[in-house]
Length: 310
Image (tube, rainbow, N blue to C red; front, side):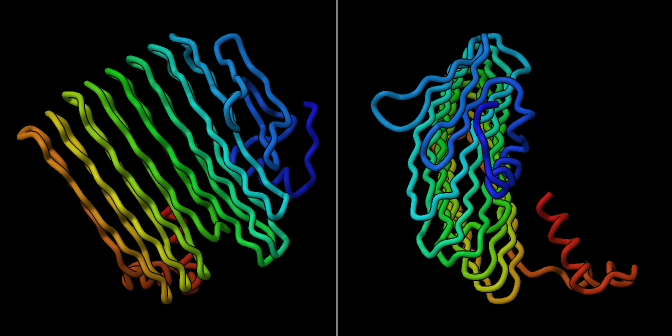
């Protein structure tokens, strides 16, 4: 590897992508403080810098199976606002894993921000697992701001499984996901968020089920602590014979606040759409049961939270 990272930057990279500078395999593009610092492509996965704006195009050949591509972003420069546009073009019958995510380390009084706009174009029967982690660190008063936007376009029989996790330390985030699904396409999204202090998180899902037998399942789990605020907004439009399910589960603690705003639009008699939401504090019987096993209240609380976000 050609690139060098300091200790804090190496920790960020490991947190959001699970890799370090000496153990990356397959195709990857590492972005640091607004610039790509190293890139590797393979015979089946090509990464090209955009000419009209910041970002990259990732091209995955049809019938590519079992390969991975990493595109993590790390920011350690305070006061930086980084905006990137990444497009994924996935060929027919490909089966790949894409690992993204962003980490910000800020020890200054200036805000640091990363806005990532990711667009997915999956051809027929392509299958993608997309993993995205967000994390903030540093003891500065400047905010760590992350605003991911994901746009999903699935052709006939295509499938995208999206696993999104906000670990901790993010002061403000607006997380948007938009999708358009054709016949037999499938979108599965699992989101997990934890906020504390006076952090703010808003999630927006807007998915259109346009093709017959298309389906979408969205699961959002969150913990809101201290005086943090979370808002969950979801909309699924069923325009033909299809299935959509949205589930929002949140635990609130201290003086935190969580709002869930569901919308399901059934525009066809054969559209089956479901929304479930549960918001509340940790159940007393859960704490009592764990404390009876010898755990302190704080230990029991931590175990419940960790289990909730798994």
